[in-house]
Length: 98
Picture 1 (cartoon, one colour):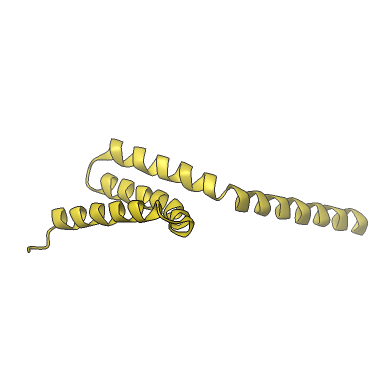
Picture 2 (cartoon, rainbow, N blue to C red; picture 1 turned 120 degrees about the vertical axis):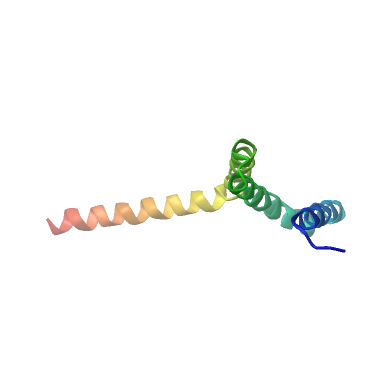
């Protein structure tokens, strides 16, 4: 079998299909796929933009980023909360020093 870009794309699609089917059998794989799918969409979108298919590439990237942001919303919330606390502490220290 000759290994071309089309062969790589076909194998990639088969691999993702197998992962999706395996993900239906257990919560662990489903959780992993919840992270792999948006990252794969972003990567495929980037590949599409680089190959000259800008519209579909940007659509895939935006969808992937939106899914990934929703998965990271809890972490982002923690980061914002910690940042607000640290900023408030710095404001109090600056006020007491003045």
